[in-house]
Length: 314
Image (cartoon, rainbow, N blue to C red; front, side, top):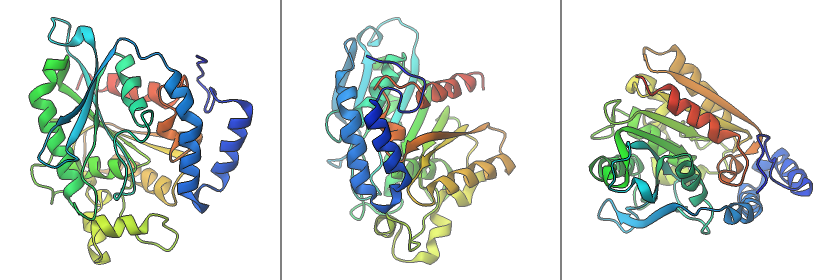
C-alpha cells in the first residue's frame, strides 16, 4: 500500500482532481458528494491488511436495537498481562437521522481499524436516531456506551482511565452534548474521559436557509427554534474540563467550519484549565476527513494520536 503524509496522497491523480473539484462545490449536493467520497476511498480501505486485529461485533450496551458497538483490539491484548492500552470510541455522523457504524463494510470501520493498528483498543459505536430518539437521546447514548466501556473494556486490554471520544458530524454533536450540556443527565466529566476529538461536528443547532441538514436539526433538536441556543454545545463551553481537539475540513457542510473555529476560540477564552487544540484539514471535505483513515494517508490520524499522548500526564 502507498503511504502518504499529504492530503489525498494515496489517491490517483484523477481521483485527487475529482475530489478537489467536488470540494469547491461541496455544499451544492452533499449527499451526492458524500457518496462519491465513500466510493473513492472504500477500495483503498478494503485493501489494507488488518490481520492481527480481532473484531468483536454487535455487542449490546443498551436495550435498543441500535445500542450496539464493535470492539477492535489486538489478540494479544485480550485477557493478558500486557499493559492496558488507550481506548478510542468513535461515533459516526448522519445528520442526526441516518447513518450506522459500518456504512459499507469499509466506512466507518476504517477509523477503528486505524486506531487499533496504532496500539489502541478501538470501539465503533452505533446509537439511536431522530426523530425516534430526539434531544438529548444522542448524548444519552454516548454516555451509555461509555458506561459499558468503563465496565468491560479491561477484558479487551483497554485502560479505563484513558478513554478518548471521537465524534464525526452529528456524532461530534452528541459527544459534545455528553460532555458540555448541563441538561444532559449523568453528564461525563474529566474523571470519566481523558480527551475528546470533535471532527466536523455540529456544535450549533441552526435551521438557516443554507443549512443542507436543517431537517435533521429539526428532527433532533425539535421544532422550537427558541430552544436551539440552550441545546447547542457551543453555549456551554465552561461545562466540561475534558481536553478537546476540534478539527474541520477545508470543504465543510455549510457553517460547520465556522462553528468549530468559534467553539475552539471560546474554549481558549473560557475558565477551563484543560487544553484545547484546533486542526484545519486542507483539501479535505466533510466526509473525506474520516474516510481517509486506514487508506495509507497519514494526515489527521497522527495529529489525533499526538493529542492523546500530550494529555497523558494530566
